[in-house]
Image (cartoon, protein in one colour):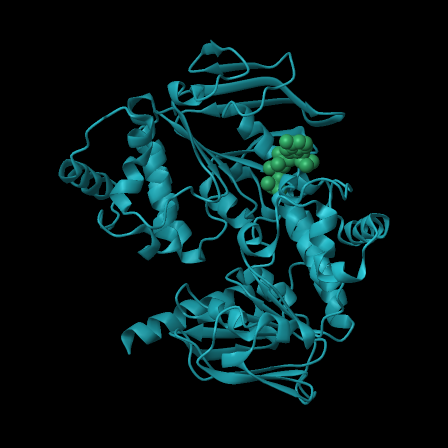
Length: 509
Ligand SMILES: Nc1ncnc2c1ncn2[C@@H]1O[C@H](COP(=O)(O)OP(=O)(O)OP(=O)(O)O)[C@@H](O)[C@H]1O
């Protein structure tokens, strides 16, 4: 085996905001040809490290950086990462949905003015050649809004690779898979492997998904509270040893299938009847008091379109939601009707739909009860209580919501809705981008809410989460319910087999 070639070497990296040291003497060595995972709980400092590489943050004095063996002065100048051959793909992918694939691919060079005149015919040919190199079938003329989530992530990654050109050193993938359906990530990682195959470049991959990390990285570096827990070869790790390194303790009780609770015969709290939307048809299911019901399927199966329709966030064509004695026709239900009846909805993308990033944490978490709270002292007190209950870090109600790390935003958002004493809680992908510790805290919050008698419905493609949390999992394919799993059938592998099996059946039929 050839000796490893360190192409990026960071030594003694610290970063302090005010009095808060969020990176403490961190070292990171990345080898050419490797996919290197960067892991840690929410708020452990991963994004801060990446922002130092991007020249967005100046590190504390004393840090050193070498790229391909050459010393690089810190802080990195604005835009200097391009000269170093470093490129970034963030969770939001930074694509413009209304313009075409090829325009998105070339938007960087067009904006930079590096080429005053662009031959779009030539650009399309070179885009086709690029996609062919990686075995991807993308139409350069298609608007990005028409692409699947996986295709968008691939486009963002290939654009980042293209921008590096011959200087290709390091591609930083900062949770680009967080909103992807499971089946998309295999394709994405086959492209990532191609990118490093010639051993000229490396990939730094930030993720909270332990399966993805174990399957697709060569080595991992773990941060805990801004301190490195070392770099480890992935093939010597298991999910349990990774959790130990990330959280500093083992998390118990996460490995059996289902809750073991039986709800057959209990009268329903909520009943969905005859739901029809542009993507689903004839959907009927019941949720009993205290029950946690999962909805799943592959992307496009319609499982993720049900919750917004139950909340009136998107109009249904037909169907009813009955909650106790109240029957609400879904084509005319509004979010205000839903809230008034005790239905709350936490959407999947907390940054876009779930919150107001520019307001403070206090203002965000108390929005649902704000009309009852006028005094800032009372508001801050309530926010502090929610932050305590939900373990939102830092415990600073005056921090702007957008400055919280992803998992802490999610905990604050859940706390916001659960404080309203809901009867039916609708959650889409509640732990996307959330670390294993925060995930366990969110599970606890949901179990407590269910134990108080509320019904919970979770739409998710995370089979592990569904398996651990749910009393029943409903599987959709092509807009219809194809399986309702309970008891031992709630094992993760069984949910996954049912989703993929029903898809194959549907394709055959
Ligand atoms: N501009 C800033 N000003 C003050 N504090 C900040 C700033 N940016 C980040 N922090 C704090 O630094 C700590 C590390 O945050 P960072 O975003 O690096 O965590 P992370 O590991 O990327 O988390 P996540 O997995 O949730 O994305 C957090 O406590 C965060 O609140």
